[in-house]
Image (tube, rainbow, N blue to C red):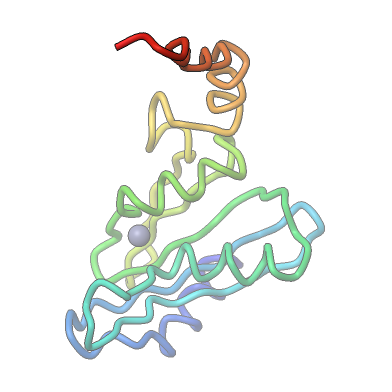
Length: 144
Ligand SMILES: [Zn+2]
């Protein structure tokens, strides 16, 4: 079902530059499914991938837990590194279904796609270990 939703969404991809159309369907723990497409821009660096589009739509609707995401491309391509990091913020166990237009697919997880991910837990751990900076000492008046 997620592959069908992603495949349908893919029709709305805005990919006039790469012509690499991508559609996603993200299943939230609530049971709702959020679709996404890649949206390119004449200023290439502003492009956003379909996976992040789906996550942003879901999160902006109040979702924060996810079960699975299907990503459909011509060739069953894997999510890019930026999307892997983005998705890792919301769970390493989220299933990633990478499908091509012929219905062939593979299953993996966000954690498998991004081993040793930089997660919110790692950031919190780093903050706990950080010692407060020492205050710079002022020279006593009259000293060089
Ligand atoms: Zn991406």
